[in-house]
Image 1 (spheres, rainbow, N blue to C red):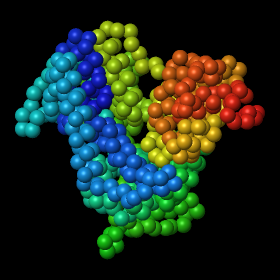
Image 2: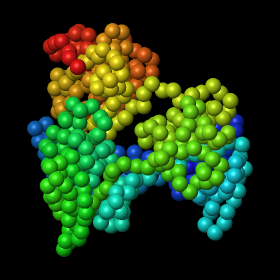
Image 3: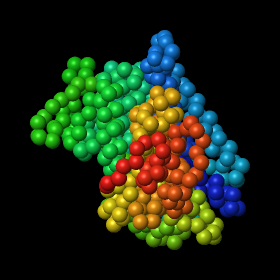
Length: 461
């Protein structure tokens, strides 16, 4: 149930394992990630960054005006999505997965009714995987009307750059759009309830992103709460309160609400067969993605943990293999995270604070981009790599990266965590030069006092 990253991956893997599979999807294969999230947003972000970099590279010998045509960009984005959706459809056919379009509803154990317009169909199955994803959280007083108050789906349908944009929520979704539209020329305001951007992330990383946001003329208000909105002539007036209780307001053309997401677990018939959910609606599962009801599994955003496509992907594989009788389990050491701000942010494993709270004596290595040959050569010197390790064993506990190419570099860190690698393992691994991943090598060496391209000093927590 659900043709997003978790659902279609599970279906394809089951097909590979010789199982008969029906994949139920209400709209389009690929789900939120492919149609409205990961892929289309990064298509926009990459294009806008290319134009922005070109228009700010006079010192590198690149001159001339560069303009982004949002209508053409939207067409390009739609073509990319269409191509990838088509690819998934082809993979399903090749693996004998029957794709059934409609709304699925569990009517009893092993029976799913699918509503297809005015028609319905019932499928009987020995096993059911719930992979219905998530949807944007509604902020009281700022309910989506998809004209004034918009969500991330609406933004990707813009054909004109708004002259001003107020974003409520300074998490990953809100900040990615904040940097994007600021580069396109919008006056962007971000209102965040917590005391830092990207709440929950390493504070040093968050502080750098704050400075970068300010340098991109993004007006950031931390520890602030959005209270109300109203139309004022041809603008929207958003009233918010700051930490000291003082009320302020900002006028803008559109308001993007990005205060999180919640699982799509209502209206599926889960209560009919007794599937346990927590108070927030997440389906409770064990390491094999089994619910408390025999034959019912859940993967992706409907389960506790980070709402990330790659988590859903891995869980989909595990659930499929468990159903097929293989000894598979979702026991990964870490689920990496990447945020496509400017610069990018990527993390895996524990932060310094989390490691210390877990009882580790922490060793920290840090390497700045300004000392990295590759970063200097391309003019991307803002950022650093931080490696957190157990001071006694040298085992790497976590990695935080903020800077260019962070989203690509974090995979090596994830592999290190899964393998239980030590600082010496990473530091002794030859990295090609000149590349960004050399910063990870240097950070690992720095934690041991062996870094070559920066001065080694005693590291404190």
